[in-house]
Length: 345
Image (cartoon, rainbow, N blue to C red; front, top):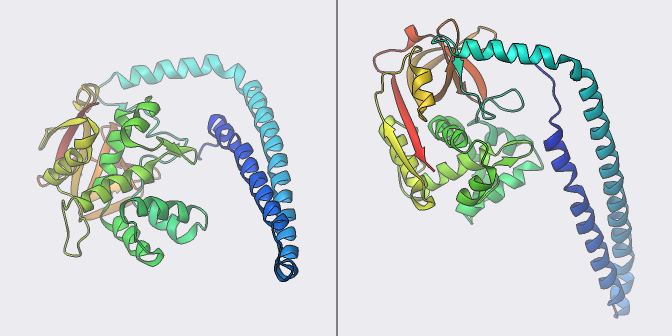
């Protein structure tokens, strides 16, 4: 059964944006009223004034609704927070005992996972190369946000051409996602520094800003002419290309990266490798990944995924398509490769 949890901090952050929305609507209403007053031509008054007055009234009503929404949402969140605190307060002792037990388990060679907000239960389990494709097709609000992002790199990108762009990224984007996951891990707990380096917030819509960073890496790769495919857009990545892509992406940001290919990573030594500051990406050619229900998903032809830990029964934990999967070491063949990334940020 999946966990249900309201992220109070993120919800309050979104609620705090509502007063600014209300102010913008109020300013708009003032501008409309000013236009009405400045209409001196009788013919314009006849045809335009009534419509502008209705528009002003609608904007004013929407502003009032936003104010009510902000007040109500704030009260709901405060009530939820107090209720949750009352319900969970008596469980602190049990939680500490469980945390202690988990810590002991993670100290053993057979069970360890990266402790990070990048891979948790409060959002996606890492980035998802297909998310932008789905959002652009089906979300009538956020699709415009994605188009705005895209036009920062391609100012003349049309609405329709963007469909093909996001679809292509959906098909080849796993390596770019794995790199984005490793960068988010590097900037864990440093959102201000992340924004200073990359120029946009580390968080968006209550989760890490996966789409923005993935698109940034992919578009930069395209515009710099790296890893071009037959259609002119960047293709899927190999070990050597992933190193080149991330080095190029970070070159003007004052961040360097050390990479090592063909690393001998096992379930026994993964913890020591990770704790040395290395992020591990697996190039998995052919084999099964198992979801949390034990269902097998066969990889045919190649998939780049970041390794997030090992289970106590000796399987690798990985992030793929924004979800948690498991890989048996015996399924990893001679053609599959582990590569490490270490950033100097």
